[in-house]
Amino acid sequence: MYPDIIGMLSPGAPLAAPIPRTNLPERASLCIRSFPTLLRHVPRRVPMTIPIRRFGAALAASAALVLAFLAGRWSVSATSALGGSDRGGSPGAVRSAAARIPERRIDVRGGGQAGPGAPGSAEADRDALARLDLSPASEARERERMDLIARWAARDPVAALDYVRFDLRGDRRAQGLSLVFKTWARRDPRAAWGWVTRNMPGATPNLDEVIGEVGRSEPALAAELVAGWASMHPGTAQEVYLAAIRGMAYAGSFTEAAQVIEGAVIPGAGERDDLVTYLAGQWARYQPEQAAEWARQLPPGPARDQAMTSLSIAWADSDPSGAAKFAFSLPAGTSRERALEEVVSKWLTVDPAQARDWVINQGVHDDFDRAVAAIATQPQLIGSQPAVALQWAGDIVDDSVRFRCLNTVLSNLYARDPAAAADYIRSSRDLTPDQRAEFLRRFPSP
Image 1 (cartoon, rainbow, N blue to C red):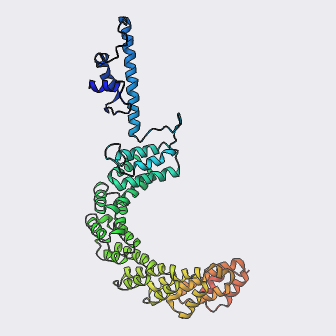
Image 2: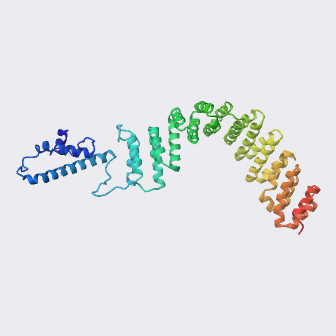
Image 3: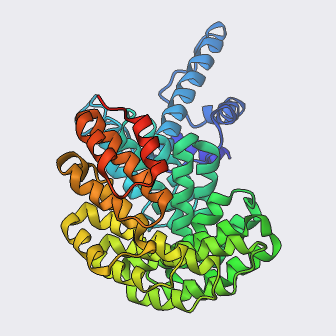
């Protein structure tokens, strides 16, 4: 090593010459041990008649100079490895952490040579994130952090996960995990799923992140992966299936999602019914006619009834008239009654006059009782036209539904006009004797 040290101390040695990356104490020890050899290379103009008693002081001073020189050389090398000096263009100008953001972005974009400290390496990524922590806390800083993590995850997801899992806390950790898993699942879905199932099998939200992203881009693969998981982990089968179906629905792969549900390995029938209900609602938001055709082919039972109701409600958001016609076409019974109630209730918020006209044109029917009650109890109708609201309530076929609806309307009317409420109770032909007596007790004449 002596020639290396002598070369570094030679007058013509370049300041930027590379030096061995040993630590500073080792270099200092090496320099002191090699001092006799170094003296032979000192220029002859240095007088050699120094008294012996001053030789020790000279030796100490020379060693200090060597140490200072090496420390400066080492710091320059270390700073260069971290992406450059923190000094600005003018002497003494220190660059702020915010001014170094472009450098951090370059550090994680990859390219150039690979290896420790090189742009695109895990060390460079960690250095860029460490320097980010020097800037003041802000939303901009955290957004920059997530951008750095996303680019890191696209190149080395395992290293990015290590940083997120062990260096971040709370919401930042959850956000970082979601970002890394989604990025990884888009680029290599099998690898991402294999890693999360092996290393974090109990972290269901992270499983959902991966399988949901796979469902968006590769529904067939998502179906394969979730089926394998469900056969081994029945306790979380429904949740993971739901995440895969949610991803498929997001991408418009509704038919594939329906096939996944049909072949789902789920222990309970009720859990499968929940998946059917969810898909029916999502499908009807964008393709209501196709969703209706699928729902009609479901086997009779609770799942089909729930799907029809969910489909009607979702359809009403975009086309209340079409949803009402679909609901009315359902077989008579509880499912149709509930669907009509939900659709008419939504329709009333958009066009109450059109909704009331449609109900009137369908004729009196007990399956319309809940829909009629929704019309009668509209706050605007009760407040502005209480007599009309009472008339709607009186047309309800079922006695119990009619009584509850009339009670709502009369309570509001009695608070504003007790005499008008009492007149209706005494004269109405829509009340049974028992109902009249109960209302007179609740709303006595003024």
